[in-house]
Length: 370
Image (cartoon, rainbow, N blue to C red; front, top):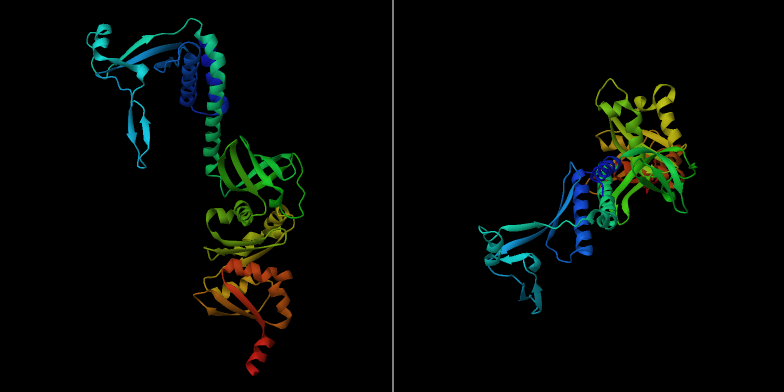
């Protein structure tokens, strides 16, 4: 094995895979030890030394000086079974003090006696044997590196490219790895085109058996939240705060915001000049309707706002502990307050975290006359 070529190859791996040089050298050392034991000596008391600058490889056999050979013991476990306890130091690597002194006069218990045993053709044999072990270690290191890189991306939005598709998923190129976008997690009605750039919300980052698993979604309510935070500068600088999002993907979302600066209109800032800001968000959401709701610390006011587009809503908190409320609307606002298939009241309930009941003024009057 050419030493210079060896070091150059390792440097290339370190740069290309963006992994620690220590990890690579550790993997190589382990691989070369395995190669030596397999091809030259089955004993376990060998170590390999790689010069990181010159690439020179040397193999040493070693013996640890002991006052008594430890062959292991037998012990009884809690269930009464006899188990073998291996020696603290491999038997092959032990040498009695009296024998060690014949090799090294000043030897004492605990010392290590080494001897270089590097075979002349070790490089050639080791290269082939080590390749598989090194490749595995590098894959593990690369996998861990990717996991570390994406660990803080969980619950964030990223821009990627649609790289592949199968029956159940789209695969999004996110740089060093691909995210999985299940077809059940796209916005209903949207068309995903191969090779197109697409925003996705990272829902899970985990270390799978075959590599990093990055799960993504465009259906998650967090996708809408991150869209607003990305496209509305006032949300980034803190002059507007996004309180919460309730979403029925493909149909409707309710987004509650409020201003920390009395001179800034929270809803107006989200809409933008001539609707430019909200227009860009709606385009990304494939036309999904978005209700901008003004958050208020008073739950009565907040609930009334959340039931938009219904107007002139009167709210009574019927149980503060159970978070239950009654919303009273005019007859012509009832359908707006409930929404198609109950979507408006359902989303308002999610947004405000109150169980809502809706009645009309005429219903209230009828009940009062009974």
